[in-house]
Structure formats: C-alpha cells, structure tokens
Length: 99
Figure 1 (cartoon, rainbow, N blue to C red):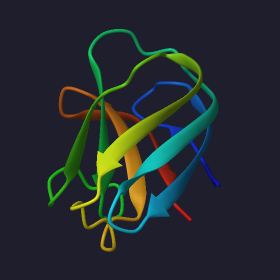
Figure 2: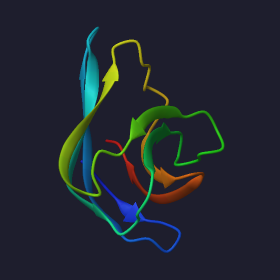
Figure 3: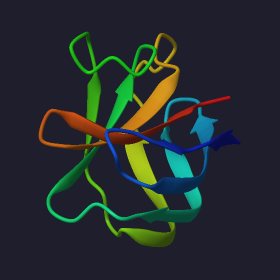
Figure 4: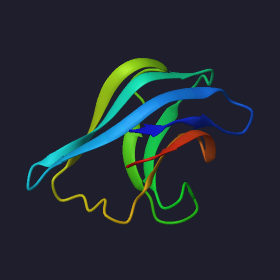
C-alpha cells in the first residue's frame, strides 16, 4: 500500500492500494484516510503526481475520513499511472504512490 502525504498546507493521511481484475476493472482501496481539506475533493490517477500531465479522473472523493473503495472500469489502462492525487480544483491536497 502507498502512504498519503499532505500537500499545499493540508494534512492528508492514510493508505491506498489497488486491485485489478482483468477485463472487469479494479478498485483503489483507501484505508485509514483523513484530510483536513473541505470542499469538492476529486481523485485522479497521475504520472508522478503531476496534475498538468495526462490524468485519469476517478470522480469525487466519497468521504474526508475512513475506509472506502473507488472503482474504475475494465477498459481503464492504469499501467502508466503511479500516483493517486486528491485535489481541490487544480490544487493537490495529498498524494500517494500506488504500489
């Protein structure tokens, strides 16, 4: 599992792992997640945590605290994407490398 680190003066903690089922899709599993950021938080798969490059938008963060899964469809090629970023607008509030 990758460990979240806060960014841009935000405290973001927790872990994330990925499970892929060929032809079906996969899940990002957030565990012990918490952030002090409020507002519309979005989740992205990124290359090295860079939101200005190609990203996969996984939609809204379902909760600011807790354990939850975020699913992605089977036709999503995540092979180039190594970092999960939680962002508010275009500003990262935390990221974790996906093992």
